[in-house]
Amino acid sequence: MAISQQSIIINLDAHQTLHLRRISDDNQQGPVVFFMHGAVENGKIFYTHSNKGLAPFLAEHGYRCYVADLRGRGDSKPIISSDAKYGQTEAILEDIPAFIKQIELIEGKKPDYWVAHSWGGVLMNSAFARFPEYINDVKACVYFGSKRSLFNNHPQKLLQANLIWYFMAPLLAKKHGYLNAKGYKWGSDNETQKSHYQSMQWAKKKPWIDSDDNFDYAKALNNLHLPPTLHIAAVKDKALAQPIDIQKFMDESGPGIQQMRIYGRKHGHNFDYDHINMLTHPSARDDQFKDLLNWFKARPINSHQVTLKAVFCNAPT
Image (cartoon, rainbow, N blue to C red):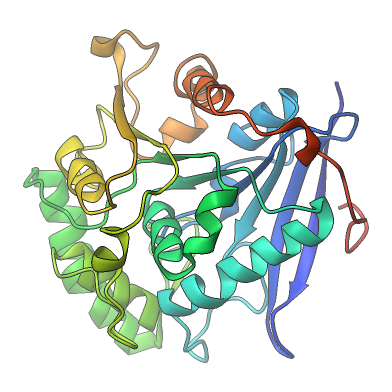
């Protein structure tokens, strides 16, 4: 089985492009999966160019995978600088719809399954709240270490959230005009000053309300049944997504089907995973990746939905 990768460039406006990585076995016409990374990250949390990671794993099983880079991150251009004034509101209202539209142009349908890491799950559920018409197209979701507000009081949380994210990061973002998280080795990518501010406010146990237009996400989701969602927690994820944090996120994400599973040796798994290696450790293939596959297989798409409609927007890279 030959897994191929192509970069797809979306012209968001005259000055900004978005990047999608399509990963698939081109001999397969299986379901379509949309991937969203979290804060201070980019799409490479889901894949490597040598076909390691979750997206290539799913491609091996016949899925057509589309991994997004939010604007300014990964291979979306230009990279984040002091000139970047956008934040998570734009990610929810503009970036995600642009990704979905491009996937539909290529595949002839919207994605069948959505997958997120960390803050990407918050952005995805926020998109469902803003665009409830997406819900009927999505058969299931899987979120790795996704939480909105932090409720745990572990010492690592006090360091990574209270000291770094709430205190040092705002000062540095103000000083430089953006958060150079990659430079400070706090993550794989940077954040705009606005995106950091908005995510920081939600992480502080404040209401799930948009600071731009006061849209109440929690109120909207209270009346919606989101796609069945599997939440994956890791035993060594002490700071960023403990089960209490994930459960609170589940509680405010509406009345739909949601399930949380915790991954580590004491739960019968091969490794004690943390917030990052829950997606990058080789053992994940036999633990959470396998369970994700079963979660999807339990919620199949209709056979008539798997036709390829359009060609790629640019040459393979």
